[in-house]
Image (tube, rainbow, N blue to C red; front, side, top):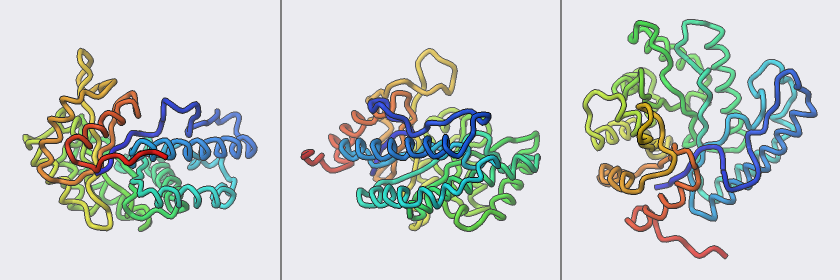
Length: 302
């Protein structure tokens, strides 16, 4: 079992998502931003190794305007040695890696331009993982998209879009159940049509479900993962007290996390904490996993 947090480390004085306005685009600014972002990504990974946090979601903004037509610079070739070195570090330390394309990636949109832009974004993010030499257990996490007044038709459009994607992108795709439109059951239907695994979100399942108990839901999602995909990836969070339904909590409540772990029933999972304070919650969560024997005790840091 691995545990981690997404994109941003709030302890370190750097960002791996440095970007700039489209109107300010130039190759010089792009090179500067990507250089900064990849250097910070390396620092984040090193921090995570020191704290045993071996699951990480990389920022979609590693390459600003990576899928935009304005970006005609061959960043893939220019930064290939850096991507290779980071990938080697990831593999050496047995990280699990994911990326989560932004909300504008909607494969089942009835608007062809939106679908084509979604394809371009997925291709860009998949290229980063390919340049790093990561295997198929590194995943691109997307949502079902819109319902558009006809969910069966929307699901068919999603499946049709997946089928025309290049094989290297399809091999990395996972679909996450959301809190408003696409429940676990809907995602399982999409899996049946496409073969892509279901990334399980416990908090979204609490918000939107078809009556499946948490333990059963976890098992159903896990069954969609093949050996080449790795073990089940999931997102973990809980409700922010006093806020609107579906708002993520700011800091992990270890008693709730401890209770959630009882539903695993021996299932091996990699858990991404979608909690606002990032590593500040991931570090005590990892300590709890060690205390409960889910992961080995930490080795002394030299």
